[in-house]
Length: 81
Image 1 (cartoon, rainbow, N blue to C red):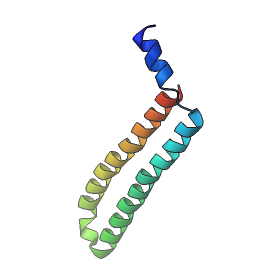
Image 2 (cartoon, rainbow, N blue to C red; image 1 turned 90 degrees about the vertical axis):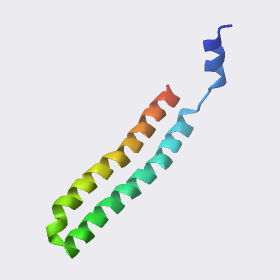
Image 3 (cartoon, rainbow, N blue to C red; image 1 turned 45 degrees about the vertical axis):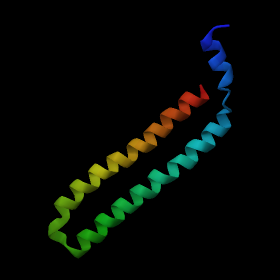
Image 4 (cartoon, one colour; image 1 turned 60 degrees about the vertical axis):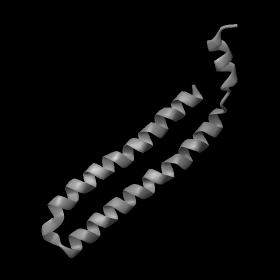
């Protein structure tokens, strides 16, 4: 048998478990996005002139957090294939 076939047999992932894993993995980025925008709203309410800086930081961190969710989505499709 080829090594690829053996490796494919060794990784027998249930697609339902992969879906549950992705759902649990998406909780973290969801909470992270909520905390980011809550901090921006709070900071803008306290110091309106800092809104530009806060928005720049918020969008940067938002992208970083969403990349984690996208990586989880890609891994879900790899595991369920």
